[in-house]
Image (cartoon, rainbow, N blue to C red; front, side, top):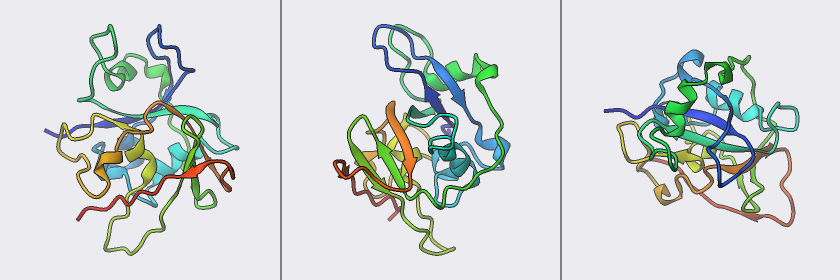
Amino acid sequence: MGQYYKPIILGEANLSTLEVIRFFLEALNYGNGMKLTEHSYIGNNFVSTFEYQLTPNGMFYKSRVVWAGDYADPEKDHDQNLSSMAGDFPEKYLHLPEKTTEDYPYIINHTKKQYVIKPKRSSIYETTFHPLPLLTAEGNTRGGGDYYGRDAKLIGIWARDVISVEKEYPSDFTELKCDFRED
């Protein structure tokens, strides 16, 4: 079966309580599939709209991000994972106007003091995967449509970290190199 994903903005980290869902989007409402590899590519309108909210002009600048799969582990001391929990809070779903982030080439991880340079789309015949959904994904390898290509070991290493999308990167941060392509 295919695993479906929701990008979610979380509240501040508090290890003693259940995660707070501040906001999420649904891929279907932007004309995309919900499986990770169906929407996680450079130039995708759904990813760009979510990503824009992490820019200095967005509503959730410097927020904790997770691309929550519906096959991910349940939350600690709870019987649901973040993807299913989001469904319990329909008021947290927003349908936002489409945005572009072409002028914001850097994804910044403030928790780990790292940044990624978003790749350019190489051609209309090759899928260039977007680092944000893949680096923040939870539940990868548990369903159809998940990512199994190059640098798959990096999938999810930024899940629940504080992320922003910027025009420049902080000089004291380290670049994380990733090459997300299917072989």
